[in-house]
Length: 466
Image 1 (cartoon, rainbow, N blue to C red):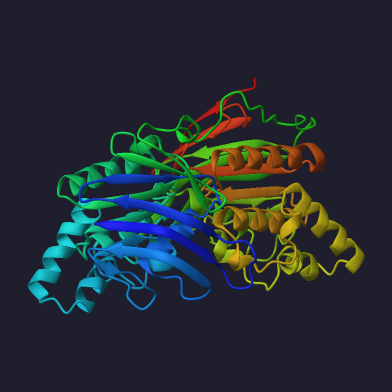
Image 2 (tube, one colour):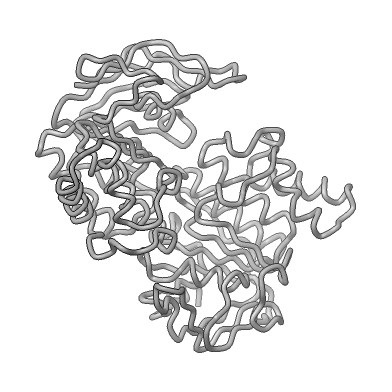
């Protein structure tokens, strides 16, 4: 059905090829997995298969159903779900998003409606048809992106790290959907560095590194079976010095969105100086909303909130004191170079140029991103963008660092490196660090406390180091 023969590709102005001599195939009803660490070329390969690489130099051949796929021919039979779901969501409501593709195929309205119901039912979003897409969590957006592709009835589905934004139940639901599609004869190509959720689905594994396929296996490669590595010591750095003062105090906190009801409900939370805290909860439980409230980006409807001696902080009031790493790093990258990105807040704080240079260099070194200094941020891989965005929020030396699903797009080694960086921030700068995620941490001993969040409330907490 789909054959890739000796495919090579180089991005404009890049000497080293992003893809070199790639060959693979997938037949109807087969599921193949392209496994590899972040930055190895998985996303580029899927874009090439779909015919979406508009610039650069491409050689080799991609054939689908006897037709050669080129940048001029992007076939409806090949459906691609991007790594970042926000990059392919175009419409305001869920129904409109799923209808967009079939409408462009000029299908009759009854068929469009049938496909909408079918696709949304498959991903568990049928009851959300009139919901504003912007109010969705990242996991819900990822499921919606999958539904928008399913509504096109593709013969081949390309999935770029499809579980990166999904919680445990979301992963189970996705695998159930993929199993049904596979049984219907649809071919599936999954690009992943964590293959554990797909072990019962995958027929063949292509191991990718530095733009090439190094091996083809029929059994799962052990290196990519887990989101962490055994025997890898991260370390938490020095304990926060006593006595500690609270950097966050919240009581009876309520936050709502217009049209979406109350998201945070009667929440109580205290975070001490220098604490390492993990807020754990499934998609849609209110984690992102809570972090935005702590930065002042959202104002509470009720309750008490005090952050670093400021009651009910407003956006901009805590510049350089509280920093938030967004769930999607692309939302906070806008400068022309990595240096300018990391220096942006420092310039707003009106620091001397010499101090700006020192802090930019220090932050990039801490995030292992010094080699990216002169690169355009939006041309980097997803993992590299995460590290640059992290450097930009730690450069001002905040007292409180908030990270929203920071492991999306990072391979196991990079996830552990991120925890090591965050431990060093507490050790070297006394920073309090809060990670909000729907997955357990790669190192379960990293946090001082794990707080479980459900339906807008902190329902239980565990201090692991008493």
